[in-house]
Image (cartoon, rainbow, N blue to C red; front, side, top):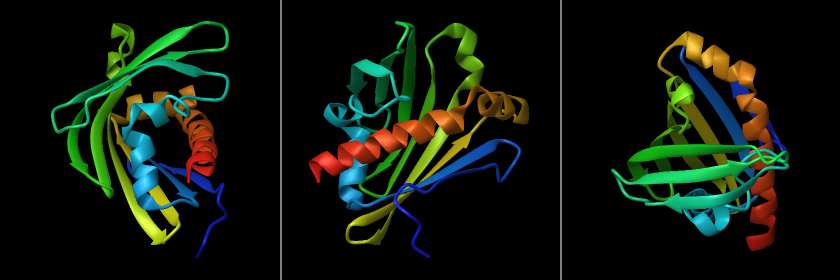
Length: 163
């Protein structure tokens, strides 16, 4: 079944997981590239109204990334992670968490699967694995689904400009 371009789903298949799925009318190689190159990530990462003034990516197993998100009121949040698995253009596995020590419990292990549905259509499945059900539930209450939904809508806009 082909879902509309903007279809975005969030599910909780286990006590520690959040799975988000989004379809894009773009080739898988390009969708993968927009997740791994700073010149693309800086244009879509974060909810609407937020910018990404710092975006560093060392895309290699054991490499890391660092993003500085700036909100509409000037608030800033650092995001960091480390890459565990990179299989272009099919799969990325990395840690993802806030840099603030008070937010260290919220780190997740993300697995992104880029599945080619047709030559110009890609299904992205993002699975976030948290240390406990309690942490997963807190992340859900913080609005992770809404935030990622807005980010992926912004990514779709970037893809429309560059494809």
